[in-house]
Length: 245
Ligand SMILES: Nc1ncnc2c1ncn2[C@@H]1O[C@H](COP(=O)(O)OP(=O)(O)OC[C@H]2O[C@@H]([n+]3cccc(C(=O)O)c3)[C@H](O)[C@@H]2O)[C@@H](O)[C@H]1O
Ligand SMILES: Nc1ncnc2c1ncn2[C@@H]1O[C@H](COP(=O)(O)OP(=O)(O)OP(=O)(O)O)[C@@H](O)[C@H]1O
Ligand SMILES: [Mg+2]
Image (tube, rainbow, N blue to C red; front, top):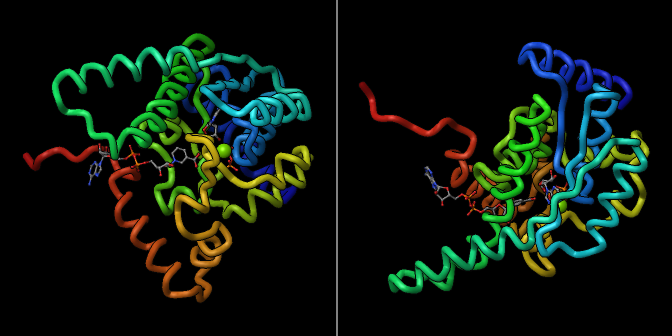
């Protein structure tokens, strides 16, 4: 882990130099992935890194955990509450759809959730522009492979330092970096709706995805779910297609 942390830290420093920017920032949710990235950007740029905490109807426990994370690694942090912004924007869109007779109730929860992720992205880029920093993403190999992120939301970032680490390796790195225990041991959740956990929504577990990524045998049912997610999300890992010339 020591070597991996050093490699990623050096890579972050190279990327900032190449981009001629001044530093790095990350959205800190109170979950393990952003906790690890918070520690890595602080190591890479002790004086030029920032955490942004963006509650959006979030559970207060998550906010507490986010604070614990930034305090434990001494990362300066800003809090931007997006609850009101989200309410106003989502209600406005919903009203127009309703008036036009086009509202699809079945998609409401997902649309609401993805808007939160995209408001966070917009907030991070606004702050990044202000500071001349890059936006650092938190997707790990399991999320990247399955496309378990919002396109142009939490997937809309400049660098993805954990993209080659399985969820298990992220956990190991979190332990090595001294991420608070309560953050390491809670259920992974995107916090997109009440009671949501990643594993409930996906219908498989990070342990299974990790094993599949390492080339190990897993039950056929899990393999099918994972491969279907991978195929369905191919567009998220590519640039938007344009017609041939
Ligand atoms: N073939 C294709 N070619 C080009 N574009 C295509 C496309 N198929 C869909 N699209 C576009 O992509 C959109 C669907 O993708 P997207 O908007 O991402 O939405 P979608 O993949 O449906 O939902 C996002 C998923 O990521 C999860 N998530 C989100 C945020 C954070 C986390 C977390 O772990 O923290 C997890 C969330 O719970 C949900 O399951 C469609 O609305 C359409 O615009
Ligand atoms: N309330 C929030 N404040 C700031 N950033 C957030 C918030 N919610 C989500 N994010 C950003 O979106 C990313 C994606 O969320 P995701 O749930 O995958 O990661 P995590 O919360 O760090 O870890 P876990 O998967 O274990 O919950 C977060 O890592 C973080 O960068
Ligand atoms: Mg989370």
